Picture 1 (tube, helix red, strand yellow):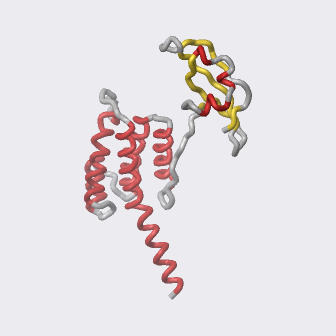
Picture 2: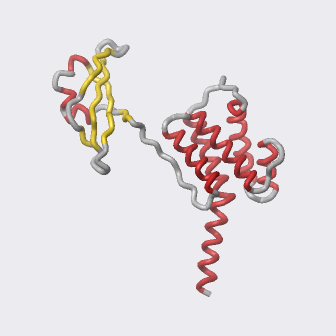
Picture 3: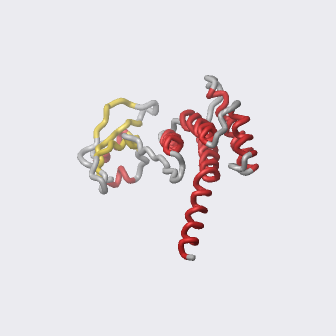
Length: 198
């Protein structure tokens, strides 16, 4: 990112009496699109300093718009893969509850796609294991995902969630998709390639 023009400030002093928020336009060296970079400066150092490239390099910058990062899931049915991708996008902008609830929904949708449409999520996870779609420890991890998202799924938002919670849930969701869809598809491609050579 290359700074594009002078830095500006809205003139509002932050809770620390000597700190002030400043921002500047930056142009991406790759795609040439503009983003806004924001950082915190010290008022007494602002004269000319904010417009020095070295001054910006020395401070953390937050970006607007936020970088939104999803994840592709090859070999997963599109309606499930798109929801899993959206769970990762939520996580990338720190919409933690959204990422957890979507991941929980992806596990349930996976069970339904595998013909398991009866009972609560607990029963669906057990059935995924019983019919050989997921391993035992993946079943246990899926139940932990279920516990974490259960209150939120029923409108109870009393307990806080943190980054580690969201990351753990996404890891479990990804493992389930790998075991149910991606792993078998990978093996089938390898087998087909070998058989084509015989």
